[in-house]
Length: 321
Image (cartoon, rainbow, N blue to C red; front, side, top):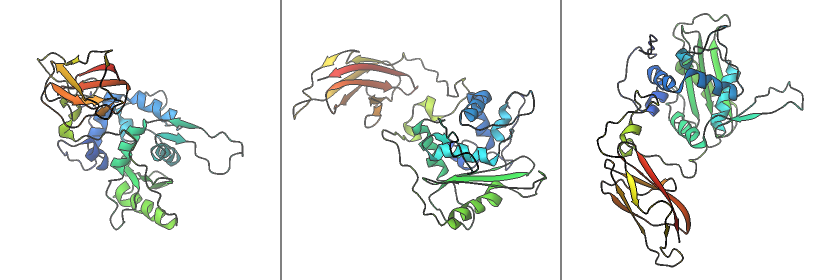
C-alpha cells in the first residue's frame, strides 16, 4: 500500500523476495512502484523530458506513482527514442523519419550513467525470447496497458532499435492481448526479416564491479523502506575509521624497484566483514579482520576506502612512492 495506491502484478500473484534482475525480467509491477516511490514520479518525468520525449498527463494533474505502470501517455516513437539511450551507452538521440529539413537539429542527452546503463542492458538481454523464437543476442522489454488496450515490445542490439505496438486504433480492449504474447514475436520476426546481421551488445564498461548479493553490505543487499530506498541497519559498533595509513600520508614502498613492498592497511570500529577498495576497485575477498594489505601498481595519489557490513564507509587519500 503506497498511501492508498495498491498496485498489483499482471498475473495477480506475488513472487515473494525477488532480485532487481528478476523483477525487471518478469515485469513485476509492485517492485517497480516501490523503486519509483523512493525515486519520485516528478524526477522520472523530468528524466523523460530530458531525453526529448513528451509524456502526456491529464490537464492540471501532477505525476503520481501510476506513471510507473503506464499511467501516462507515451507514443511508440517516444518509447523507441528512450531505448536508443540504452542502446547507446545512456545517451538518447532525437529520432528522424526523413521528412525533416536537411539541417534539422539532431540532439542527444545523457539519461543514465554508463555503468548503470550496462546493468540494465545485461538484465534485458536475459529476458526469455517469445515462444518459438531464437535468442538473437538482443535486449528487449514488453508491456501491456490497463484493460488490454495496448501491447508493446521494444528491443535493440548494438546498433539497431526496433519498437512494436499492437492494439486497436479506437483504443478498444482486446481480450488476451499482452506484450509478451502479441508484440514480442513481431519484434523478433522484425529483426529476422530486416536481413541485418545482429550487432553485439556493448560489453562491460572498464572498472565495472558486479558483486554477488552475498558479498554486499546489508544496506545494499536489499531494497528497503528508508527514505533513500536502502535498508536502515541498526548497529551498536562505532563507524569504521582507517587508522593506517593516515589521511594525507606519504608512504615510501619503493614502487620503482622490482621488490616493491605492499602497504599494510588497518582500521578500527565498524562491523565485520569488511571490504577494501583502492581507487574505487575492490581488493580481493571480504575479510573479518581489521587489517589488510594492498600492492599499488605504481606511484602517485590513491584513495583507500573500507566498507563495513552495515554499509558505512571511511576513506583516506595517500601518496605512494
